[in-house]
Length: 174
Length: 171
Image (cartoon, rainbow over all chains, first blue to last red; front, side, top):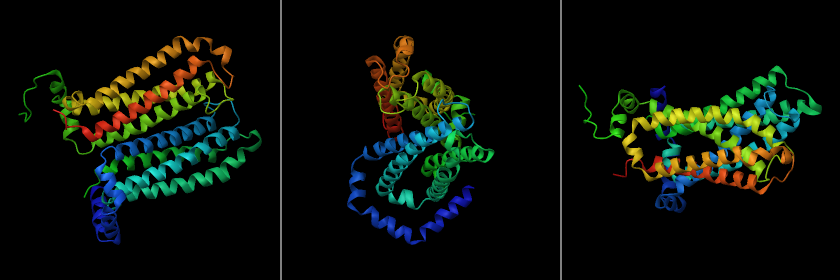
């Protein structure tokens, strides 16, 4: 796994991403962030708060799907928390972009970062699907099917993978 | 044979213990513990925020406070136990650096304040919950508890993150 990520990072160094990251490093926003010590930690705190909002929402939807919690119908519970997930995603993307601008080379020339982004895109597509298809069947007080239960648990796993990726960006081999 | 100096205080004794050295010398243990810590703390944070936001009147206003508490508390306690254990192991591996880091100490202060706030709410304010369980607007004492909790936990995260950027720069 370490070798694979190392080689992936090596490969990234040969792509135009390196030129992009180097060009970004000279830009005014990157320089500004570099000069302001607290900017990165503060943006990370915002990022963490948004993850907390979306992850807790996913857990609450799951708890309701599995009938472990909630007094509302499955439809009400899903509507309530999916809205939180979308707003949290906006904050996650914006704060994430600030972090990329802040440290372009550390982020873009980093195998773990791209693994995280891949899982992130999968999770978003999956959440849209969950929202449009799975949650629609909850209308009228219906309970979750076996498929919906599996989908809910898969969402939890995907988010755990995203968070793992987020932490390991700092430990990318290479 | 040990390559580590003789401990001169309790924190060094912890850091140079077999457990501390094992974590510090491993390439993967520290980041893995951090990952567990992050997943656990966002769970604590998110679940606590659901109740706090209900108390200050921002979200879930039509839901019973008791029901929301009952649904979120198992997550909070389970995840808090996980965060405390993973955090404890992270601490052991660099104990003497953490105890002299002011942000780490502030984080502990904020955790303590969050704990006292929760205890006060639970043992005093919450005793009358049957009278306002379903009210969209709760008594001022409960609102203050919710607001303080959000502030304390926000500061826990901020100081926690600050530790990561300043560990080792204090002597």
